[in-house]
Length: 383
Length: 109
Image (cartoon, rainbow over all chains, first blue to last red; front, side, top):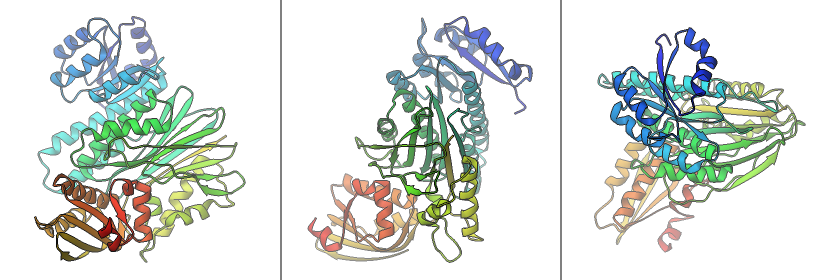
């Protein structure tokens, strides 16, 4: 990023301005970010109208004169390409739901964790850059290939760069895109001492699928901040996505919530393979299936969840069907059994090692056969 | 991907075989819907010969099912192989599309 991005921070709390300037001073000095401030929605709109170079908005919800949710509603009228990140209280589902409906791109929770905020800002701006590039090349699209390359950039832009750093666990993830098909993503969420993990697969490819991926990711993060239980999170995301989905796109995913203190992992799957559990003694099992339909296509469907307690040294692996359905030159599928066999009596020494082993093994199996689907794998190991 | 079809009264049975993935999903939908007659009230898709279906394939099946549902026609699939059955079960599609063990069961259903 060579351009300096301008970020409007909207909050009625006067202490926030010096805090942001202090905590973001390196980015400001390096000319990466410039911050402007407003104390309510009305002042924010005035600043946005006066300064078309503002790229993103970071807004609190409760403010005098005009609150953050009303401001969100006004943003597309000012500039449809602005991206907004909402600061919300943990568990404030009503406001989060409204913010999602009004097009918030992402969420951070109060009290603001500046490491998390830095990651969120970087990701929002990275997405914005890809989005602008997509818009500028949209008119020049002559071949599907172009569209797919833009879609793949958008897909890359929503993947988190840095895994969560927590005392009780380590996480490692990777997504290897197929040439022509793009629909996988993963995400890490930091919430109130918990670590949320997502591995997902969107049904289609191209720019519409990237947009759907974006909505899925935002809806999931919002729901995860607002609701604790994974099964409730998935039901909420499903309701969000299926409200306006005329093309029947859908996403299958596993969402897992890990408590680093107790080792308890609770997960729920929406039409996705359940995670694999590798015990520290080398026993490998597929965790129980939970009940749930792929997200976005059916109203009022039920999701269930399961829990497992990880002992130190235990690893869980979340993956997409790009792993199990990888084909070799003889048209054989990699399959779940090979994945189980890979770790049987050979527990990984770290999350990164587990992840690397999966990709190496799939690559060795597939040989020269073309990769027909995205391959995504995420490993969490309890320390 | 190949299709055969057989019509008796207002019931159309379509047998599909081969693979449905992102590369041919929209052709699959067009070919399938091209077989429908306005008089068909019940469409049964026999997937006994289907080796593989990807999520893009599931999506076009859902589109076909919803189109027929809008016209108040019945749509069901049957005779899934183990591998294809797993895809329907894991994705939860067996909860939103009628699945039967055989063509006969689908006709009864």
